[in-house]
Image: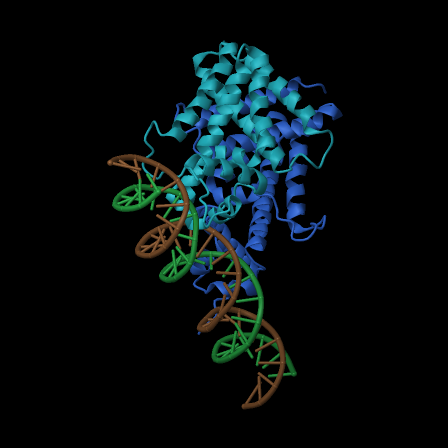
Length: 194
Length: 194
DNA sequence: TACGTCTGCCTATATGCTTTAGGCAAAACC
DNA sequence: GGTTTTGCCTAAAGCATATAGGCAGACGTA
């Protein structure tokens, strides 16, 4: 009986692809094992269980998002940076809905999450990038948190409703609304106290 | 053996309470049956299955949201209406996280959802109320859809991230950001072409 | 190449959830 | 009070997570 060559990384990668295809909620160890041509219990030699797999997936997605956002932000600032940053998340959500949902999933605290666990670190990378986008607006310190929350809410809310199909039943295509919304956000941030 | 007096409505109501307590995803027919002091198969006389229960829950939540939003909007317009409307959703999300998630859950199409199914109708009620909030801003027709999507994205995004705990790790409390964000939204809408 | 160890993937099994089938007794009706 | 209806039950199948233990392929050593 030949060996399948499983590793934690290959398993997480396969889980990410599968989640994109069948949905984050439908991701099961059974389905993943089938996908990998392996029996379910074999996976337990490499991942601690379903919760651990989900956490790994969250970390993978957050890291991929941070990588792309960092690349998109390179050399940009102000409105350009804002659009590039927001587009990164929206595009990723469309291309990888399962991963995106994983990125948004609250991490199940297997231990009182050590402050430098890989998931936490990946989350912080994204938060830091968000802050760097706002540097272009030179906001008053008291408005910085509001701006972070506004940006996060808008991008996540739009992508989330779009994925759920809430925008699909009325014209025009959501791309048009997306620019309008981002421009409004840019105007708001430029209008806030500096 | 005395009867439990189950009805579809009592079951849905109990499911809503349970979902608020243990989370929408953790809601199972087993747990619900335990809650009601009944064996799991007994529920099948009143609901078609787990998917049907979830759909019922979505309808319940959407109807409750529409009821509250309608009451909050009575006699208000403009900025007042905007705040009252948005507060309704955010408050509901805090008080009933399980129901709120149910409201947001995409409905599983058991049949090609008849256009006047109760869930669809409940969804439309909420959409209509959203539009009525925007009447106070007298927007140009081409901007109406953008405004609906902007409002929806912002409210849902903020509530969703807040529920997930994304705002809990930094000061100040999110209430402060909430008003700042809503005022910015109000300013944006007043600035859009009328 | 041959031996010994390690380890990857297997089968077997326990538990929990969804769902269907069929039985029995409490309610409801006349 | 007898009959019908109906609500809740037990029994059981199918699939999921998860653990325990076995067997053979891969690897190190000589």
